[in-house]
Image (cartoon, rainbow, N blue to C red):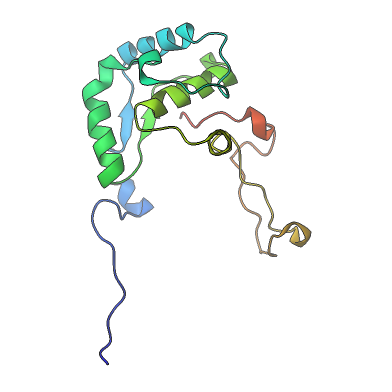
Length: 162
């Protein structure tokens, strides 16, 4: 019997954080025209609950970045698997509007998950490090939350928009 080394994945889908800091091709800077387009889409959805019916592409047009969205869809499916959007001032929007923006962008990247799975994207991971009675193992350090020190309630989380 010959020794067979384990499979080692390779390509753009395999990356380390130290590699990401050497490039910024994973950061998408939203143009002022795209931000205006986002504002118009949010205005068109005003009064709608972000947790209710899904947002579809036609309700959230992003024509100013259509070519870039096509490139990003390909990269998400076959490459690195993510992008970070910059240039959207999250303080200008309510939590509900940020949820609509999150779902509006998502409509351009694929089909929405069932309601429960979609709600989880707005939540945070619980800290179970020192709570064995809740199924957590005792660890030396607690799991980091989401950087807000636990001030917001899970149903009030905002999507990450640096």
